[in-house]
Image 1 (tube, rainbow, N blue to C red):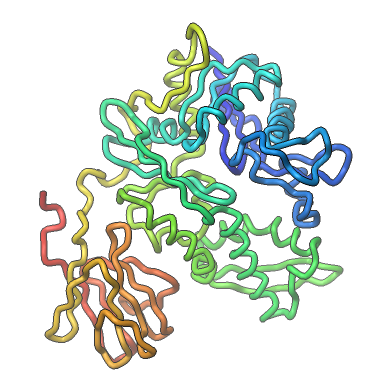
Image 2 (image 1 turned 30 degrees about the vertical axis):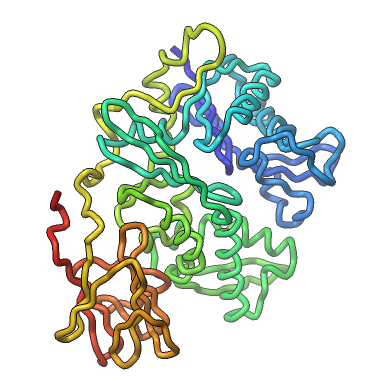
Length: 432
């Protein structure tokens, strides 16, 4: 039985048929001509037309009036319709679709999804929560947090895997989306060019577009290398620079930290779109990336649930569990509980880690009060103990830190040759 699946996210549409990804189109529209530019065509010119570029129309799918747009484009639903239409035209339009929708969509937005597809001449056989679909094909029994990067915000979907896979809760983290992370990354890279080549790629829309076009490749390199070599051709010149991968991770740290602070489970899953942002492992310990086709596989495996339904369109946030999960994670039910690190030992003095931060000063003292002599902060966040350094000479296990770093039992925090703290646990972390 042929099955076609449409995945909707804040950042892109994906259309699958019979195991093949037919179209992936970024959620971007530029409205500076008679015919709007959509998807990849819009991405290629977006930086040159910032005032007429729209990206959040799937994230904020609604019919609230837009200002400054053509009369035929009244609201985000109109933009979503044009984008959906372009995706369907780019492939042989299916007669029927199962749609994986964002976890945060409400009933009005689900209704708009059905209406937009019907307006495009496509029947919606059913809809399923995207986080549920991703986990159902991927994970063994346990509790998972699925992190999905949106445009202006991010979502954390709590998914329980037992006999069935059920999405139980959704948290939204405002002002921590791709908009913010990409802007911080581009600013960090632009600063590297300015410092090393006296070239500012953000001074001109065309130069900024070139930087934006290269960003994905540079982030792929950052995931594999300690340092990324940058090069941008501009008006016959080839400007070069280098940037530490840790610096790119540090540029995103405040946004990833805000998201990590909402994660309740140690088993955190990133969608493919989310995993490209550097630095996640500085904020979350047990982390895996869900395969790009995980939602499709779940829906294809359970295709009969979405057919031969009488009446309206079915929406579900529960699916059967896959008996052969594709991800190998440490058993989420046996993750260390809160007391991973309970104390820090400095010479003969032990300092307990509680809910309030501890500050390390340059004279080798630890206190609950930050001062001008503080060189680091120890805090507990999202069931983890983390260190934030204020001084470049502060190290963990001999390695310099950038932004936040998770601390585990046995880690040695040092400030040059002056003093060292040892992270300790006073309990069995797997005790019931």
